[in-house]
Image 1: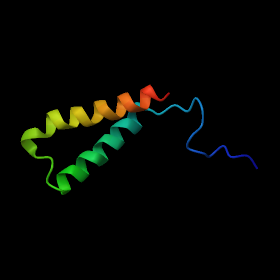
Image 2: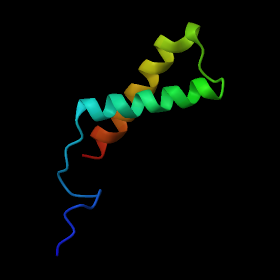
Image 3: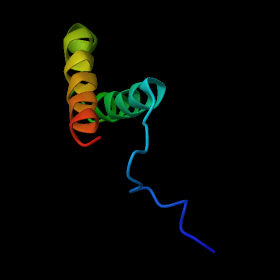
Length: 60
């Protein structure tokens, strides 16, 4: 058997939907620990999403 299920495959594409889900999970954790409030949600979520997207795309 080969190891096609490895998460570190060259050329593996991560969808925009996956990036959005990851961003949402991080935002939820920040809300749970009190680091994210409704008044700062819009800007903070943009920052979270942009950081994850830049990190993933840079490593493609």
